Length: 310
Image (cartoon, rainbow, N blue to C red):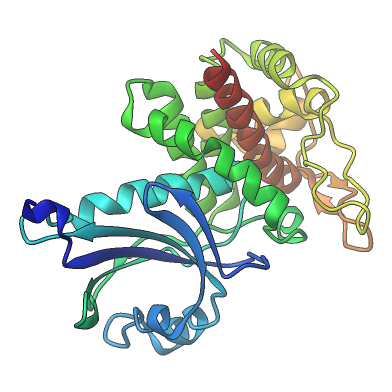
């Protein structure tokens, strides 16, 4: 038997997650990928040499880790840098279904069989992804996990395949969730929607294409939170043109107040709108920005399902 069939260690690539609430200790997805509950072994991935004291303590509270564990041998070693990519692709399947908050950290290590665990002292680091208030009201539970699992393979196929437009749309969702400025995040998300729709000539074309794909009456804020919190009633048809207008004003560096005097589709982006029950009203631009991320997720889910069925 050749050496490659006799693994002597396991490469670990893991990322801590927030807002996940599940019953089992582990959920296996295939291809060495799983979601595992925090353990002392995983807590050992943190390094005080790399993380600040605050970060070290915050990551220590992460209840779940997305993990890729790949058996390896001396003649068949795992490239840890490359192995980060399939882990992040799986994470994007979560974000497409319902955004969750992340720490922006990926830890790598080697578990030597019979010799203990050795974590690298540094980690892959990027902006943490931040979910909007509407998404944060719902934890990531088993029904959502099943939906995410159903698109993991299609997402991975997109990310390693030749469909550049869809790959860019998924990257734009990632960047929208990572960027700290809400208007830049909105610009990325609406651009991602345009990309996934195959491009749009103008705001009316954008409206038609997204309504044709999702349905004009589809809720822009998915109803994740019933019955404890009533659904927000904003529909795709109601927000589509205004989203494109906001995107255009941001992209061209225009004063957002000028949208109220727009000749084609005036919209008061500073107007206060009803939001989550018992919370303050929010400015329309902020509401549109948050909705753009959820709409991009819905567009991606729909296109992925169509691709999978073809």
